[in-house]
Structure formats: structure tokens, C-alpha cells
Image 1 (cartoon, rainbow over the protein chains, first blue to last red):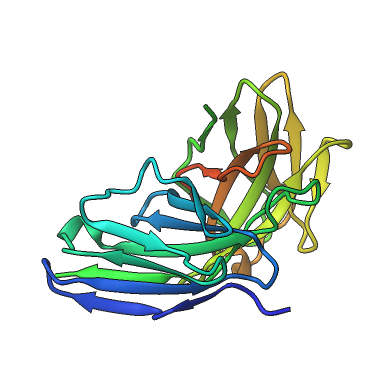
Image 2 (cartoon, rainbow over the protein chains, first blue to last red):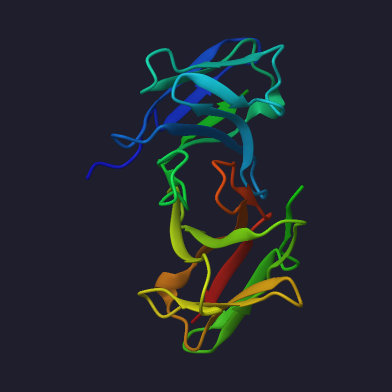
Length: 116
Length: 114
């Protein structure tokens, strides 16, 4: 079974530029998460999708961050314009969705963003 | 709301020595508990999880964790560590039977000394 796929693995941009990250979850997983992991900290949830609907985006800085999952499968996270403090690893994860079998989330390898 | 506290940001330990990584959580409802491991330049991998039943859970590579409800803890232990265990370890919680986010602690970096 293929895991969660993310691209690119690394990205370096200048502040005020824009950037986009892509994620393809495990086949059949209804729930998709984007987490931000700043160096030395644990992952923090940015947004959670259930199919193509947003479940939780309370910690997403909506003035500069946006995310979509139009067809309920893959997802894109965008930052525009980027700030220095956005330097982090962006992790995508997926889980089965609301079933009694749903316990953990499965993570991709992440995209390391450096803003200079 | 749920929260996770990992008091130790770094734990140095000699190879073949035992180790314990501490985790305490706070929640007003029942939760699932997890330990995830992150090797250098990798994503998060599930190490082990507590759902219900036996309070002692084990992983395939020798780690174990014990759920202690009265102390709201889920400490991770290994009797003898190897160089390959060098990684960052994250304790996490999720509300039971809900399609919720997983909330992570800040992580503990396990540094194995030769």
C-alpha cells in the first residue's frame, strides 16, 4: 500500500514570495491534515479536511495561508506572501475518517521550507 | 481541550543502557495515546499506540509504553538502546471515537552515546 506522498521535499524561497505544497493521501482515506513543524517543536495542526470539506482551520493564518482539497483526494497548501517565520517542515497526514477503525494518522515525509 | 507535556527536550543515554521518555497528558474525555518517532529528515512514523485494554503496549523494535490513568502518563521505555534509535520521539493524543486532529507534545530528542 502506498503511503502519503508529498512534494517537493525541499523548497527555498525569498520572503514575500509565494509557494505551494502538494499532498496525495493514502487511497481511501477520507481525512487529510496539514501540520506545521517548526524546528524544535512538535507538529501543529494547520487544517483538517473531511473529504473536500474543512473540519478545523482554527490555527491556519488565513491572511497568508490557504489550502484546498477540491476533489476530496489530493490537496494543496499555499503560502502567499511568505515570511521568515514560515520556515518549517510542512507535514501532510491522512486517516480513514469517521469509522471505529480510525485510530491513528499516517504521515508523509514532509516538505522542508526555508524562507530567506 | 487536550494537551501533551514532554518535560525532557533531550535525553542522552549510552548505547545498551535503558531509557525512559516521559509523557503526561491532559484531557477531560477519553483519549487514544500514541508515540510517534521521527528519524532525521523523515516524516513521523507510528511507534506504538494505546487504544484500550492492557495498559502495557509494545512495539516491534523493543519499545514499550504504559498507560497510567491515575497519573495521566504514557511513558516510553526501552531496556537497551541502540545507535539506530537516535531520533526524535513525540507523544500524542486524540479524542476516542472521534475524527479529530492528533495533538502532539514538543518532542524528546534521544541521543545515543557510543
